[in-house]
Length: 93
Image 1 (tube, rainbow, N blue to C red):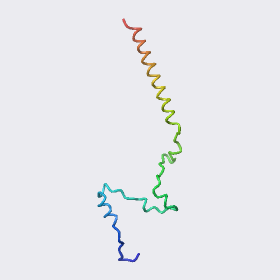
Image 2: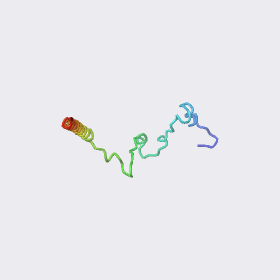
Image 3: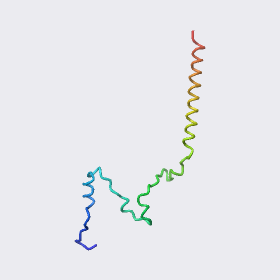
Image 4: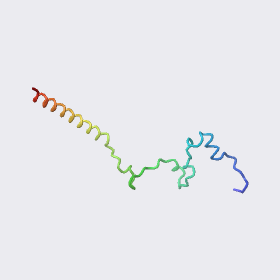
């Protein structure tokens, strides 16, 4: 680009003002990424915890295990309710 030559496009400040101003406008960082494949720009970035990708720890059977846990919890609640009711009746005067 030659010095003193202006581009015929709005500045980022003008775009920001037209889309709600500072605090509302989210700067599109992906537009400026330089990647081997341009289609990668808007891919979702995996999240990391303790230096490890959390996607490695996803349990595909999590909903099945949750159902089993909830059933076990219901049985335990029922057991304690019944045993408390029996306990109360036994010591009533």
